[in-house]
Image (tube, rainbow, N blue to C red; front, side, top):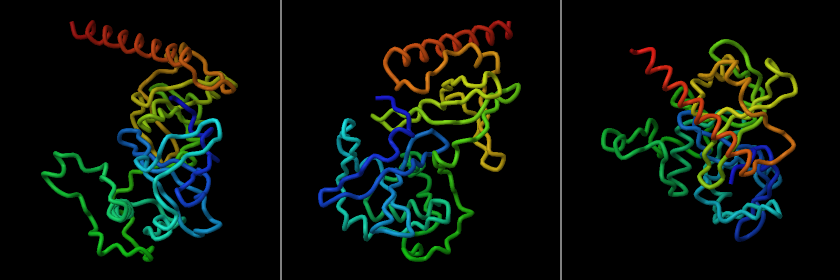
Amino acid sequence: MLKRANTIRGYRLTAPDGEIGAVNDFFFDQEDWTIRYVMVKAEEWLPDRRVLIAPAEFDAPDWSRKVLPISLTKEKIKNSPKIPLDLPISRAHEIALADYYAWQPYWITPVKEAKQSERAIPPESCPRTDSRLDYDSDIRLHGLQEIKGYRVCSVDGRVGYVEDLGVETADCQIRYLIVDGWDLYPGRHFVVPTSYADSLDWMNIEIRISLSRKEIQTAPELNPDVPFNPKCETEFDAFYKQLAASSSRECRASMR
């Protein structure tokens, strides 16, 4: 099911032994645009820390009641490594979480694992209560609330800004950037497949995409008040497949 990420914010997370809190943000890997953690707002019983839950812990969602059940208990979450609110999520934090919850580290593929473990900081040197970690190590995660408002720049100029993300809930893959096309057509919204996202530049607060302004102008418009549905998904997919086929033909023609 394809859903706007912002519409899931506020959903309640429930554990076998009680309620955890509400969805507050989504942290994704910028390399493959996959949600790695859901951040839960749980200040009432776990203040001054991030509560991060990996997608593997989620059971079948109850969309009608806006409830997301998880398999972890409140006690398990309470004793988890503390992730400070005022610092980015580092690889060291991710290693500590993976070790504690026995999560499969997503950053280790069979090829990488054969070459190296990628453990920049061993778990034993990453104490739970120590916030003075080395944050110059790999920090590849970004939050939806962070990139919301980022400028979207095409190959020939600005398009608009990021308003939301289109997420496939079955595999937590971010399929689309939902863009307010202020710099093209104020008031119009477009979807851009994340496969066209070339770079995410947090220093310049922008995302660069490998499309032209003209190509985006001809894309189907998104009605921000209407949820994703099979009809609009088919329309978006058909447009970008045709665009990719056209680009491929032009590329082959230029090589003759």
